[in-house]
Image 1 (cartoon, helix red, strand yellow):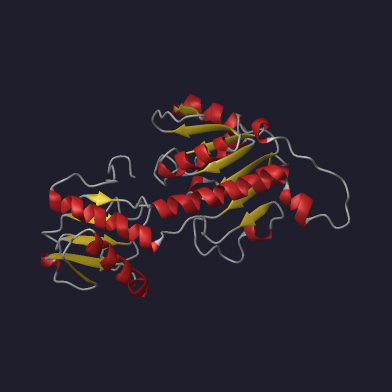
Image 2: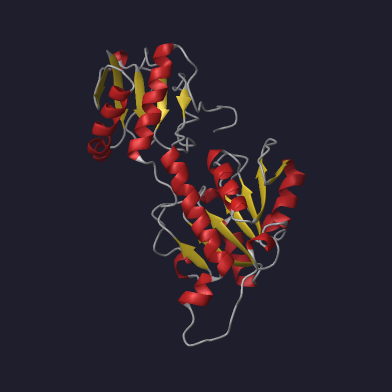
Length: 309
């Protein structure tokens, strides 16, 4: 019997219990899945960083902590977590993110806010360029960023991707390093942020880097709120350097009602919906990793503690 602790908020248990059990059964695993175990009896922890479990030292036989979220910034620095930590790379989440990003890039590319939402009797034609003449930059070429970059490239966009370390993707101009970041921003008619939150990425998009972008560029951020210096972005919007920002993630969530983003005419706020973990496919990812652990195979999607993701 494999003992798996579900360490997330209690309201998520009814949502996950049946899909996790079904995924374990499909993987031929005999699992006792519960929300409460004596710590010394736990083999795996299915984990959300907002769980009450914050001290991992009592879980002496635990083989791995399997995160339910793509982001691990709230747990990766926990010094009591000495066992392997796997982040969630969920095909359902990836598909959802790709659909959201493509939708909002197309919205900005086609000028839908102006041509559909804001006509008010104005018959003036605003014809967009073809996709091949619109430059889209993706910052972050992990699973989510790579999928979004390739989907946009398939639609004909001129796509540039930037990552901390060199990458290669078909039909995408891939850049890395500080010089590469400067070039990537200079090519960004539409900029999509899909980097993790780390010490190195916080406030990455500051006043200096916003000034590198083409005047009138647009920003789409479904990655992490702290990637953007909020005051710098508001100033760039007010001065016309940035034409519009669509933001799905924020430093404080829910976004406070008095935050300037709510009332700004050049900001679209969405309530952290770009990509949610999909229960069915996430359960299958969890079951696969438990199966690998029991078979002595390397875990998938292990976090690099030194990099922070």
